[in-house]
Amino acid sequence: MNIEVLKEELTQITEQKKFVLNELSNYSDLLDKTLVLKKSNGIYQYYYRDADDNLEYISAADKDIAKRLAQKDYYEKMLTNLHRQEMAIKRFILKYNCASVSNLYEKLSDGRKQLINPIIKSDADYIKEWYGKYCGAQNKYDKSSSYTTNNGEEVRSKSEKIIADLFYQYGVIYQYEPEIILHNGIKCYPDFVLLNIRERKTYFWEHFGLTSDNTYSDKNLEKLARYEKSGIISGENLIISTEAYGINLDVNLIEHKIKLFLL
Image 1 (cartoon, helix red, strand yellow):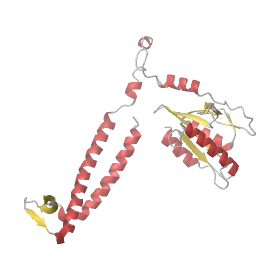
Image 2 (tube, rainbow, N blue to C red):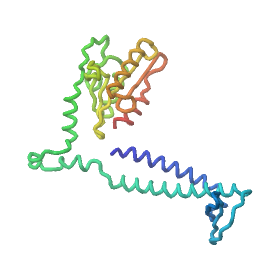
Image 3 (cartoon, one colour):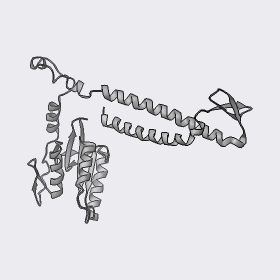
Image 4 (cartoon, rainbow, N blue to C red):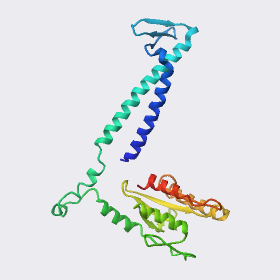
């Protein structure tokens, strides 16, 4: 369960409530009235019930009153539903502890751990297994230039170093140029493979540094098409960064994507 998604939902509900309350302020003259519908010979007739429970007919000439009452009633019901949703999400967030299940094994004594086969791996075991699956530095293509990251690996460009150093700064688990096998059996070496340990989800990151070059762009569009055929899809488990002539690497945007997908 991603609590951040629920928090975003709460933010949307707050904005929707503000909108509805603002709209309701335009119906202050109708707050004590409720729309009542009746049907006669297939034709709707409209009434309103006032605070004293009196029922008054709304003539065709006054149909705008019926429209305003219907809209007012809709806003009131929407406000009630939004409030219920808001309270339900808040109660869930308050009680939900996403770490309680995964940390259960870790809280056991060493003696008990030796006797138990946990159904959920600890973070440490999961990370160790992940590193075994995605080994870094698998692309043997010669580097025309080399830059050393703060994590100690050699990367091919200054931009890749900046990106890798941001991963390191934010504590993101990653490997540089792992080897993966695409749907057609072709080996491929994404710039980075990364692990969101909170969600236990793997992402790939490709940096396209010469998007102004048509040949380079065509080659990488072909790569993206092959990725999609292999289930590596931009916005789902593929993150892309770009730069071009006159458009430098946007560090703030890189940080935004790290926070959005990887933390």
